[in-house]
Image (cartoon, rainbow, N blue to C red; front, side, top):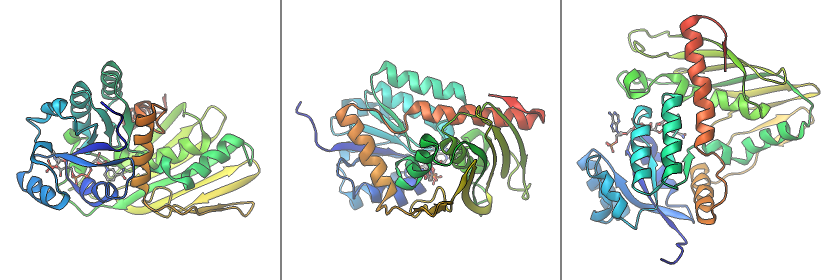
Length: 332
Ligand code: NDP
């Protein structure tokens, strides 16, 4: 078959993120388009079919999903389900011979992430994690300071990501579906520290808490965790479903950097101690992520955030839960 110029994407799970962010972004992309959907809700199938002019043959449910293997319109399956379902659908998509995009958090456990990476490698398909911020030039500016050691070594980081979630009966509050704030907003606080140092943490001590025990019965509402990095840098990180907060502060040997917000959809911005502003314009973060990941597939080049990057975070997330359980510092 001739090489395609635009790849067809099927979204799996038509909840908030697919509906409000990814589908609209797929109307702005140049290297891909919304070609299909996978949903367990027939009414959504009808709405999306009409709204996005989808062919009946490109609409699947969770039972007949594997038949997507025979559909040349679909090049990429984008898994936008609750985290506990990511592994199953990434593996089924890989076995169907489709490239896979998977939302964060990659999965609840390191073992899940490793199985997902293996399934994609075995089936010779690419696996990208939906770390949209790594495609944002404002976040890339922070990574560049680390790489170039512009202000010398990182000494201390304060990284926060949280919002007030008013819902009382959602998967984010259920352990079996992969809930808990650590995987959800916590990975943004963690990414802030990892990307600002350009290093992987070697140990962590963490504490979980909740102000709404009637709602957060199975999972934590708030997580505070402190990371040690090989260079000696340390990070104090906070994440919560009960507090609106989103910022990154990095103190280097010879200066500082501040970003607020650090993981917004648009408008991540800040400044550095030498007066440099961090305020790059970005039209649509998800569209940029989708186009860049599709270009990597079309040109067979490296992805910005492959499965291995999702796994790095989950390795730390697992250590954080171990620390909460033991009350002690945990080596990573
Ligand atoms: P929602 O709860 O809004 O949607 C999840 C969808 O998954 C549902 O609407 C449903 O779609 C499907 N689903 C299938 N089985 C279940 C089940 N047992 N329980 C609940 N839903 C089920 O979640 P979000 O859209 O907020 O989150 C989905 C994923 O996207 C998560 O991994 C989340 O972390 C990530 N996300 C990423 C963001 C980012 O900025 N990168 C922002 C927001 C979310 P259907 O009816 O079609 O079957």
